[in-house]
Image 1 (tube, rainbow, N blue to C red):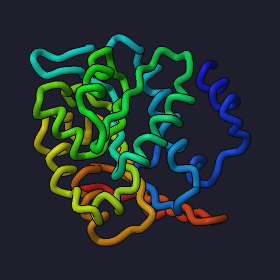
Image 2: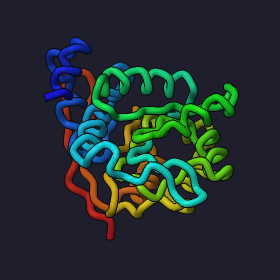
Image 3: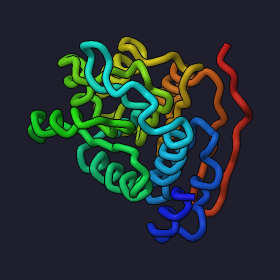
Length: 219
């Protein structure tokens, strides 16, 4: 199995607590350095492969590429690290993984994007820009991951995140798998989870212990 070979190639031997419990959990709270990136990168790539690479529409009508998965992160540095990690897991799989963030020429990122994209790693601002330019469509999203969601809210990205998830052409929560990762669990994150996740389990992963909260269902 290619995914297993790539995990071994990346020298992952034993899963960390967050990696062991995050899937199919849709929301998790874990400390920095706990292995959250691998916890969502591997299952998303596995899901894209199981759905069939190349079977999804490559481009929409006048709306750009149609990735199957979207990973949102707060900064270009984190987006770059996620992209690098995802590329390792997707090595020789045929899955096209593209990164887009502000602070770099958008023209170069658009050229890479136009070659095809199965998984898009992006910062909120740059993604909104690309959507407004009709270069990206979210209509085919089956997997949505929000990494360091608390940090994105602290940086003032909540309006952009809500616009991306609720006001663009992204499928509703019941038609996609949503993974939300946060180092803290303030009221703002709880509200975001209630709005974006129709059915979730909340897992706290901190150092050597795991705590699962009860299954939560949105009324």
